[in-house]
Image 1 (tube, one colour):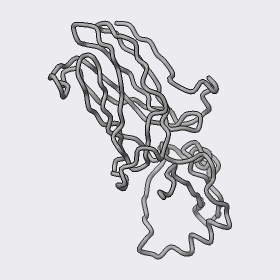
Image 2 (image 1 turned 60 degrees about the vertical axis):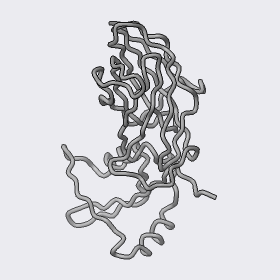
Image 3 (image 1 turned 90 degrees about the vertical axis):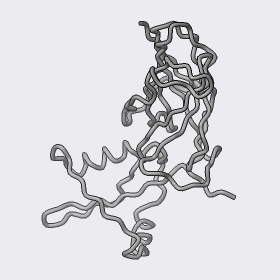
Image 4 (image 1 turned 120 degrees about the horizontal axis):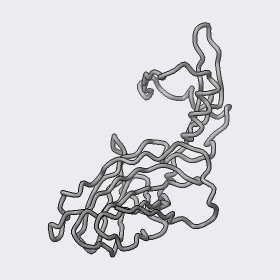
Length: 220
């Protein structure tokens, strides 16, 4: 089979700024029938990340049906952060055994569901083709809906931190695969749009105080 790719962006720049990679996971198997006529033969791997300061959906679409497939059009279900495609999917006709990789940028606060995020977070997607209409979910991590700008400064963080009641705090414990300096941890967090504003050195530990803000805007 053959493979090609496209970047459905606004063509501002071809420079992909450093950030976390977009991992692809299987979301549709070629033996899974569509919803309208029961046809099968499309295989899709997809992932969500951030690219050039925007949420970005990356997909690899493969045609495993006996004939060509075209007429691709995508629609996102309403979601907590209102993510919607900036530009309609542009995929050429795919011959049997041909695959195509594309990126689609998403804008927030357009297609809101009014519901809180699920765990894990996900987008529900409908893909219309000449073969059939296929539905699938793409899970994503928190950083996909976090902004690149710091939502507050160190003073504001300290003031807000003291206002949180004990029953509104959550503790989560994790372990790094390899030892890392506070600077390395802060750098990694920044790649995920989590901004470290203060560092406190203790006797046997280092505390990092960080903040982040989502792309969601208050509804009016």
